[in-house]
Structures are given as C-alpha cells and as structure tokens.
View 1 (cartoon, helix red, strand yellow):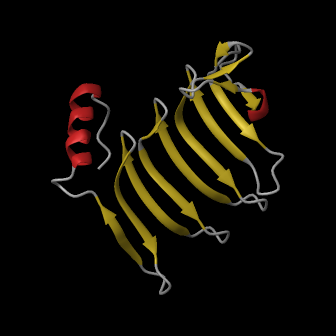
View 2: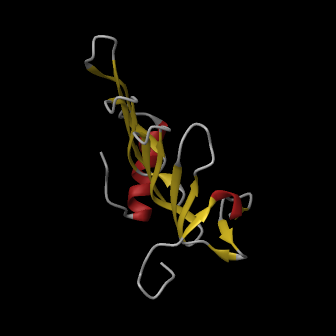
Amino acid sequence: MDSAEGSVMRVPDSELEYDEELIYRWRGELFTGVGYDDGSPSGLSEVCYRHGMQEGPARDWYPSGVLKGESYFRENVQHGVTREYTEGGEVESEAVYEYGILLSKSERGEDGEFRQVYRLADGSPNRRLLQRFREEKGWPEIG
C-alpha cells in the first residue's frame, strides 16, 4: 500500500523485475502490491506481493471473466488452498499446500464426484520437512 488513501498499488507484470531468488522489484525497490497481466489472450492474471515476495492470492481468469484458478502464497511459497475451476465456475481440482509442500489433492472425476488423488504419507521425508518448517516458522497450519 503506497498511497495516502491506503489503496493497493497495481503494476503491470511487464514492469516488475526479479532476480534468481524470485525477489520482485519495481523501479529498483522491493515491490508491495499487485502485479497483473491483462494483455494475454488466455485472460487476466494477478499476483499479490509483499516486500518483494509473493504473499497472498494469485488468481487467473478466463477471457469471459470467470475465475480460472487461485493459489495462496506466503514468503514466495504456496501456503494454503489452490483451486482450479471450469469455465462454468465449478471446482475442477483442489490442492492443499503448507510451506510449499503438497499435503493433499482432490479432482473431479468424469462422474462429477470429487476424489482424493494424493495425500502426504505420515512417514514421508516431506512430512518430516513439514514438521521442521512448522517448528521453525510458526505459520498457521493449513491441513
């Protein structure tokens, strides 16, 4: 937020620069605001940034204006629910991430029913890594 009114700064993606660590800058400064692309034939996209890192929602829309997908980030890693939608607005798939680690994923089958297609196993190396991140970072648990 950069204006006196507290509105969120919106900048075209093409004006943002990033380095090898994916730290985003605008005019040489760490970027806080929304980067967007509205010139793509596939539709509008928006990504939220805070202090140069993806923080909060990232969304894409079909050219029709219907939401196509949304993901949530914290300090540049997926942290939260990610959903993909059909152009009719129905949820097509849903994945849950914590600290960038996929916890679970469900998809809509041909019969229209949702089925879990992945769940992080209790004894997996990523489960141990997740536990370490939870202890070190202390972000709210997602799943």
